Length: 185
Image (spheres, rainbow, N blue to C red):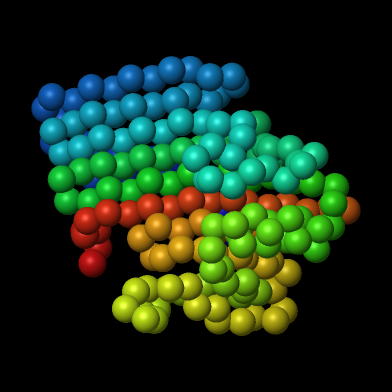
């Protein structure tokens, strides 16, 4: 699972920039081309902040791992969109390690165990109603090289996604929290 800062920013901007009256934009430039952005409109707010660490994912970074950089951009960001109709908070971080996917997965299985029940999936994770709440359910794809660990509910979830890369591993840590009704429902 890979969420980019640009994708999340464009989605939020489309919704929040409709009523431009009373809009304020604050941009703080970071290293390289990175910038932290806070936008406030009468319809709501959007904040995008880059990070070198796992940010607000609630998960530690695997020991010895380093942030992945694609084309000089950081892949790690905390995004918060808040309107009268809905809210979405996403914290995403992407890392690499020289260790095997199995070692990285073993570390994160222990971490996810501390959070509570989790689903391990080599395939696609959907949320289906179980025991009165929507919980993660795996649709196996045995040929997939990516393994996901998912804890939580559809409205509040943590995801670890691990796959082989070069002679080691690539992995993503993601926290997603939603509130209210999204306009697409």
